[in-house]
Image 1 (tube, rainbow over the protein chains, first blue to last red):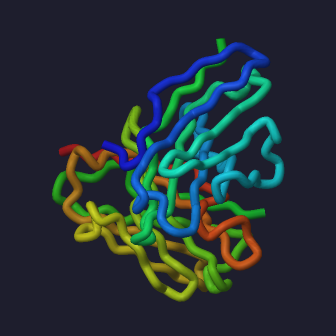
Image 2: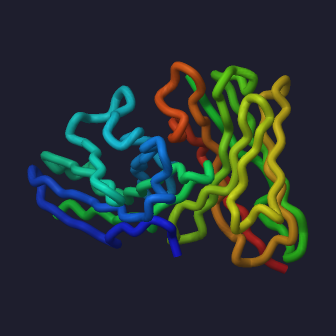
Length: 110
Length: 124
């Protein structure tokens, strides 16, 4: 059982927006708001999409955004595209300076 | 350009010790703040963080696996090594290493570059 809770699946049509939630405890999210989101295609390595709750690495589309309220972080993908169909994982650095992941969310673009 | 690649046995027997090597390029594990982390993903399951070694040789381990894990580094060889003792079939997974940025990088809390992963099967 993963430390962070994500919905197992979400879906949306091209052009729509979807949001994936990631719920944990205060200790899961630690003191520094080190929440990250990773995209993973089948058989491939994870790719960092969002770090520090709401920052995008260079090269990541601005259609991807992150936020956090209380003990729930969220990833929003706007203007859905077929290429966004993948698994998405949230991750956080805990107060114990360990890292935890969510169970992953499978995004289907209808 | 940062690259990482995992290497090690693809098959180990139960109770054996697994040793995986992460060979990297494009950064130094002696640069302030930099780290290399290890992760695994069982077939069809979620990612799991295992361990992190910092540039100054400090180490962090998953609480649930701490007794079985050892992470070390060889800065000159540009390698980070993870050993896991007493392997069990439930440890069958793809194991990844990843770069944790240091000073001036994206974030101390994320892993921005990942290796391709190596599948380790535990079976007699």
